[in-house]
Length: 79
Image 1 (cartoon, rainbow, N blue to C red):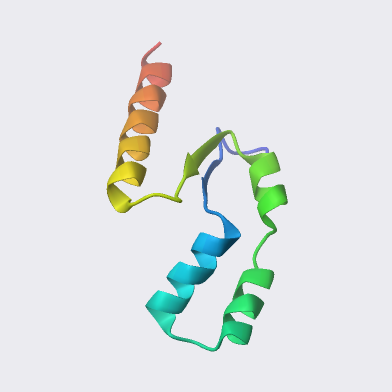
Image 2 (cartoon, helix red, strand yellow; image 1 turned 90 degrees about the vertical axis):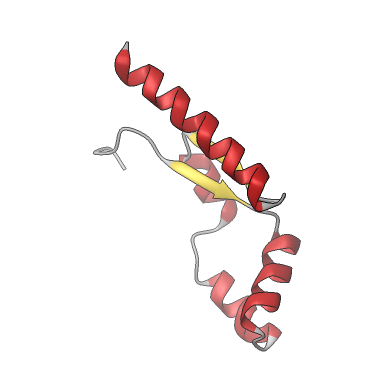
């Protein structure tokens, strides 16, 4: 990760992630658990993050966070 200027992680609770996956994919819960287990663990993702967006709310809440972070990053670049 040394070649990157920053890492943005969009984080979600395990319960919300499971509910959204099941609602979206309608797959067997064991298959969904295997899909999640194949990902980098949450604790590790967060440890590498420079910026964390909370995705436990609705899409509008996430969009507000993205826009705020975008503005913050633009300000950093311009200074």
